[in-house]
Length: 231
Image (cartoon, rainbow, N blue to C red):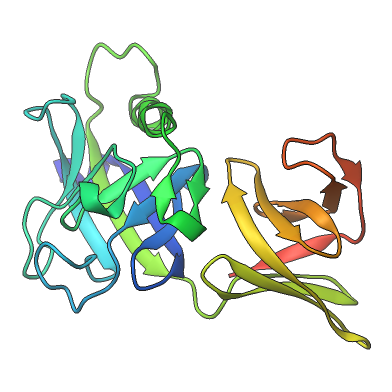
């Protein structure tokens, strides 16, 4: 009965991009977006070289590592000590999940310096404070899932669709393919693209209007359309 009275703290990892070198996605805490994730590619759950199977896992906290705080998943089939922690590259892990504020899919990495801030934000979401003095009594759960199909942004006339690692295309309902886009990076608000025909563009990570610029750092001008995100 005591367990039933506890509140749930649910971490959801939504894998949205994969290739031969990494799996990247987004991490949500009780449905609130926290940061990006980086994992090893799927290699049939082989120890040390593969990401883990998608599924729902109970989890617990560990305080005995150098960073003094980690979330460890329980009962992962065929695996042990699978944790969520800081890092930048697939080489930093043997099956765990890295977190960061900015991800560069073309290089299979989380940008340097952004992992610690993402980690701190996850801890604050768990404790409800940046200076906690106690550990909340919760059912800690981690759900790992894949989006089905490629990520795309779409409105009535156009769609922007991911076709390969860091490669996207823009299509018009009547005119067909308009351009090829290279994904430059993703931060906590936007995905940034470059195309030879339109220069830099960006769209809100969870859908919105496209903005245009001559430089990846702006200034940004309102472009076209209002897009919904799918997958």
